[in-house]
Image 1: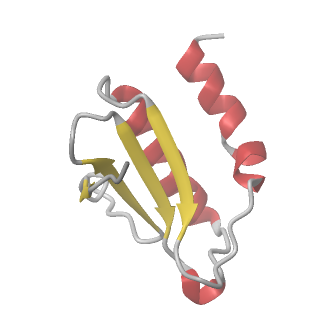
Image 2: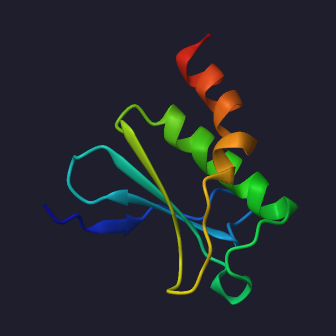
Length: 98
């Protein structure tokens, strides 16, 4: 099954520079957050973490989203699930209400 991704805006007043936030074109309920810093192998900096956090909150608040895909841009870009240790426990806590 292929998915067409649609740019879902820049995150409001403070535009995303380190990530891209996209949603599935059809009503599949998928949000995709792409770390878009391949020139530095998608290394995180404070702004990256803030933008990912804002995008996760945005997806959480969108009742049409049921799945969030996290990925990195580029063929030599590095993306490790370190993000789960940084962001996911607070996100899961807020999302699940526990």
